[in-house]
Length: 264
Image (cartoon, rainbow, N blue to C red; front, side, top):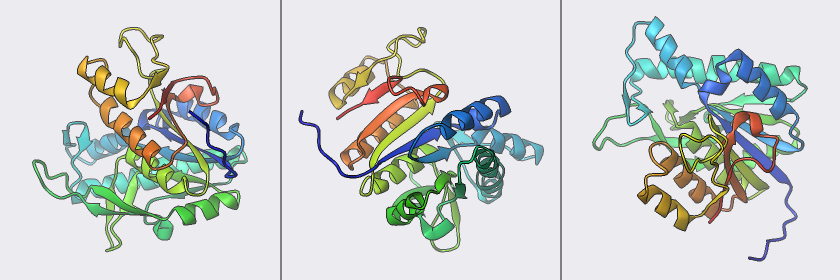
């Protein structure tokens, strides 16, 4: 395959789960590593454990279906406080201490990501948003000004409602929109070094996965559960112009050779 030539500058989008950003020790390591990444960058974060913990303190039961949170009106208030407030601003504050000029955003801020409330089919997920529009030019303008966006997993419907939105989806949709302006590398971080050939062997990282091998690995049961939508998001991003997608562990984000590389 002939590599495409591009005059666009590089941009790295790092997506990390709540488990990393909610623990002070791993958060400190993440922010240090992230601050040392040269050039343009964006950080996308989760925060589900903190939301569940706060809901419990408030006497609210958390309901999950297939790993997805049911977000009723009360739970929406909780995730807004946690994702858009506590977790997001802890990250921004930590990055400012490391001389990274970060700006925390929900999709409502600058109207950068609009979504629609997910229609009720088999399950009523409540105030959960499916992304419909991303203002990539707005984000690109911030980045060109030397600002590092920190994106919380909240969008809005432009009718006055915030909506809970999966952080992997936020990262993938932002990457697609920014691919018009930058050569984008999207990095999904989770607790393993990459996608494993053997779930009991942390060193059995699969170096590359393409669409053909993905179907085979799913059929064989090697890839299952939450990794399937993560990889589907990865292929969608690549088809929309994202340059590269990698799945790795959060403490390896500076290592260009780490993780599983996703290719079409």
